[in-house]
Length: 195
Image (tube, rainbow, N blue to C red):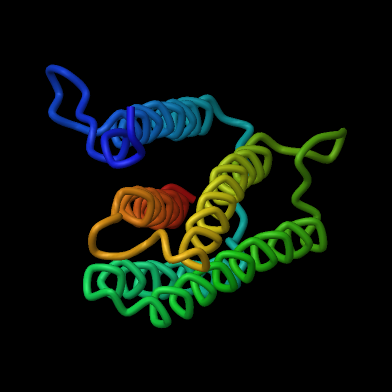
């Protein structure tokens, strides 16, 4: 099978490229994981012994960072459709930097939580704090996978393999990045409304 045939292959019965189908299944399974975590949060909160504490303000800043990164990722995608390879690279680099800034911000939030005596585990821990750490940590893991995906697409763009006739990789990366941004906004709003 030639390279062009692999890039345009469709999965029988779905009409989707196999890579796109894999991405959709990944996002569905990730959504189910976070639905389970947030459901468990509500059930455990209603059982009692739940410490109420203020969420660090830095979470709002991190939410803004991830929102802006969705904008830069969309810019990269639109630039690829126009064959503006230089803009694709700039936008991907900015998205990558913003993704790293988000992760550093989340790490700093963990430091703020510890400074406020909100711990993940141990004798001084409370389930409310543990849930916040788990939600942030599992999302951070997913974001690291998104950064790896971005890095791969950026390398492809440096080899002129991302343009209007080869949109699969940047299309998948854009969908996944928007998913991660939307997932974080859901988690942040969930914590705000249920905390």
